[in-house]
Length: 281
Length: 255
Image (cartoon, rainbow over all chains, first blue to last red):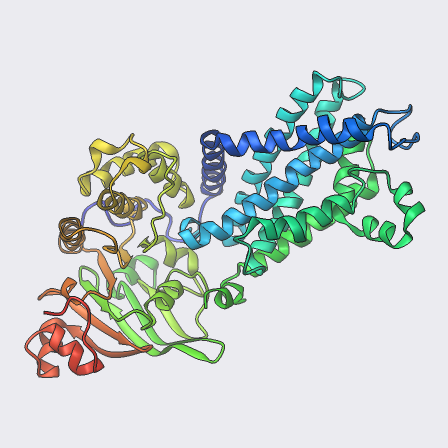
């Protein structure tokens, strides 16, 4: 037989660590290539938070007074206050968009090609997640580069570095949430549905646009909802890290949610659990 | 028994007592058949016969409710890694990444099988040569015609060196010439390189004398075997007649 057959030097069982690395690298590399090619996606990911920053925040700075709350040590401009929320929003949109593309991909077949990889499915899904998070972190830094010209910056340059681990973790959490939704929700093709039922509630019922003590003044119930919203903790983790501070509560919540969402997504994509079976009807 | 010994004796694909249902609707009912290495087996069935379900089960999109699928002796449910690495798949939907070049598509696919970029380039070039697409390696997938995309998808399915090739309605949307072309390429792979090929279709004229055929109708296997035997057993003059006699309906493409 010719070289079509499995090469004789292929290990008879399992895969070497190097092959796992090759697979991860390949998935991230493809995502990066797609990112480079889909300029509209990149531009719209950048324009959205900038519109919020320059229009919404400019209008609201007179209305909303921000008292001194951690991590801030002085009064801050409203633009400065909402920047961590907008950074998290970029990652929220990215996570949901990649989940949408997974549903779309699965129908179109790209997801099918991913799922016939002989490497363990949990590993393939986790690699896909890492790739999506990497893209979202790039988008956030592009936003920060533009915001810098309007003097929205961390107290010292080190802030750009200390926020990186937070961005990676938040990117993973929101990507994992999107992946879980993509496997559970049948009618996710319509992005308006995701906007209405996932993105808007998560974004508005959080500390992204207003400090939670203000919410508490108007509605204790809403305050409770905001506290339970993982996105609030994503925003706070970014806010503190940007100011070179560590917030153990938000870190724990974001880490815990990442594990739960990813675990759920892996279960949902497990062939024997039948989530996909029901969808395939 | 070692993996290598199994590869020699086991069928390329063996399906035993496979049943699957979506809720109350039974999609596959006690399906059994096998594909020998080096054979071109046509899985023939009308739309809704259960071909897509069977395809999803063999490619492990989800697991079967009952029954067993093995690829060269490796159970898809129990040893998915060994089973899937011996399997190459061409899906009905176009699955090339249109923004990537032909070679980038192949390198990405190889990475999913743990094959590094340098080795993937070498294998990719060889696979493209096999489907006569070497001169398009650096073109964007978007710029290819439907038939060329299919050929690249076949090359991609071969990159990791599988020994069983599965094709799901691979000629859908292609013109007559491109169809004949794809069929000839895949038949040559089975004949010259000893691959087991399972060719899924609803077009009866894609089955030729010398092929094996499995007829799936309403979730059940009506008949399987060499085409000449199947035609003789049905008392028909050709495979179209045999299908009509067995299924009670005429298939598309029947003479």
